[in-house]
Structure formats: structure tokens, C-alpha cells
Length: 148
Ligand code: RTP
Ligand code: MG
Image 1 (tube, rainbow, N blue to C red):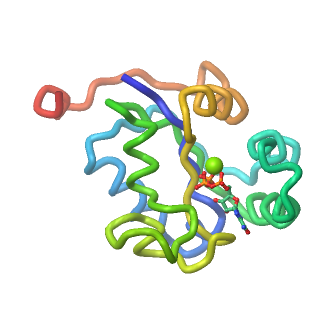
Image 2 (image 1 turned 180 degrees about the vertical axis):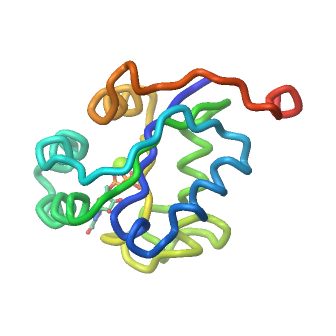
Image 3 (image 1 turned 60 degrees about the vertical axis):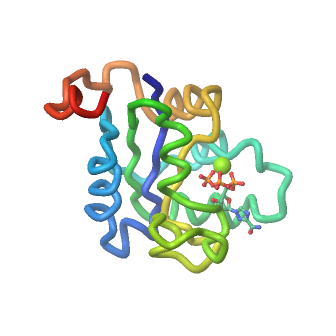
């Protein structure tokens, strides 16, 4: 099993899309093992997006991500990293397929509703930025035996 870090960004929270997004993750069969709503600390946001620190959009990306509360989650399951990226859709919503979160709910790259880690290394790095070890939960989903 793999785990990944998922964020419902401030626009997703402010547009009332939390339930919609969590519903899609749960219905797919992925398991949410940690979840929190908070305004992300500015230094944590900069650390989270450090790969983009030289990009022209870095400043606006950081202000956007800390502009209001976001929802942070650890999501687990088979190929969780790739599956979550597929559920989210392309970074630029105009290229995101209908049926994906970005393809159904977004128009702008700078307001694209959700984040998910892009590799095993990114997932572990991002989880350690946003969660302490004792914030994760172990439990069985009742449908696990049909999913796997
Ligand atoms: P994310 O990290 O948020 O899941 O998005 P991603 O992997 O699909 O895309 P990434 O390249 O990592 O970009 C991170 C976020 O930066 C904003 N962005 N703005 N040209 C632009 O103005 C631009 N490019 C990227 C987006 O919010 C993107 O999700
Ligand atoms: Mg990314």
C-alpha cells in the first residue's frame, strides 16, 4: 500500500467543495488516515512548494495557499499517489478531463482546488511537513476485502 498527501486548497474550502472532494476519494476506495483543517503556516507552505521557489508564480502560489483554511489529508491505498493525481486531473484545469476534480470545478491554474503529491519521495516529504507521526490513524475499511 502507498500513502500520499492531499490538500483541499483554500478555494476548495471557500467554495464549499470539501464534502464533494472527500466523497470522490472515499468512493474510489482510498482510505483517509489523517485529516485536519487549518491555515497553513507560511514557512510550511514555502517548504511544501520549495521545488517552485525560483518560479515567477512562487509568491502568488504561497499567498493563495495560506489565504484561508485548507484541508490536509493522508490518503492510503494501492497506487494512492498515481490514483490521487488522476482523480485531481491536469494542473491546468483547461487541460483537465471532465470527471476529474479540476476538470469539473476549476478554470485557472492558480485556483485549481486540490493538491496531491507527485512521487513517493514527495509524499513522505510533504506528510512530514504537515503531520506529526501521532496524527495518523490505523483502521480497516469494511470494503477492503472487495477492493483488494
Ligand atoms: P500541486 O503541486 O498543487 O498538486 O499541482 P501540480 O503538481 O499539478 O503542479 P505543480 O507544477 O507542482 O504546480 C504547483 C501549483 O502551482 C501553481 N502553478 N501556477 N504557471 C502558473 O501560474 C502556475 N503553474 C503552477 C498551481 O496552483 C499548481 O497546482
Ligand atoms: Mg506539484
